[in-house]
Amino acid sequence: MPRQSKKVSYFVILTYIITILFFIVLQINGGNRNPFSKGLIGLSMTFPIISVIIVQKLIFREELKGSLGIPFKLNVWFLYSILIPIIMALIINLISIKRFEGTLFSYREFYINIIIGLTIAAVSALIEELAWRGFLFNELQTLGILKSSILTGIIWALWHTPISIWYKYPESPLSGAVINFVQMFFISLIITYIRSKSESVFACAIMHGLFNTMILSSIMDDFKIVLIKILLCILVLAILIICDSYKKNFILHHRKI
Image (cartoon, rainbow, N blue to C red; front, top):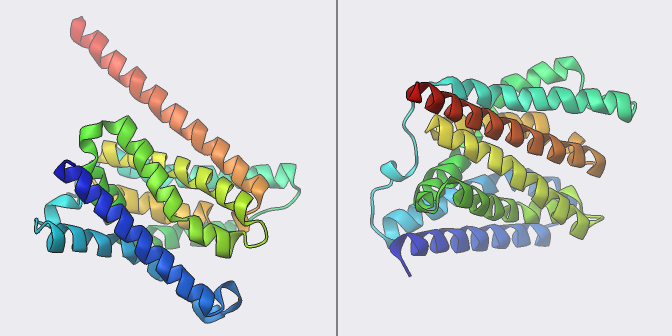
């Protein structure tokens, strides 16, 4: 097995093992019924970077800093990482008002969520993104952006399964796990696309933080709302790909001229 494949395999297996054991312990201690156990869920976001440190430093004894995608150079994709979740949240809220006759959040809550998403949530997301769109992104680059994005999306979406089964949809775990997997898969594709264009994990952290506060809050866990989110994600991806293709063709055309 090639060295990079080994590193990716060790990272994924180790992350999954730590995560599953952690949630089993939480379940033993009351799980969703125990406020203390429920409050510890956020610790799971540190497991991927812990796995990276173990794999990169202890097993393969390689440099850690260069594998995390931490160069910081502002570009237009940082702006997109902010605008996309905000616009999606606005659309979801408007659809909810018109279609389901109820608002998901007030505009005061909307502004507060933006501030939290750009600050506390973004910093928290950075811890996680250093592993997923930092280490894993770098290790999968040889596959090409399409294959690496799909593989990352599958791995990342599966990693969220314990939360969807035991905390988001305990009354319908199977259907909840499936719809949550699809939702997280498409969100991952968008974040990875931003990573490839911005060339920085920091843009991913900003987008991830805003997704957490604007799109992935518990008030949006209803299956009907999740379906809207999935369709919006597909639309966003289509627009990004079409615009990127148009830009490349435009540049190529003018070079020929």
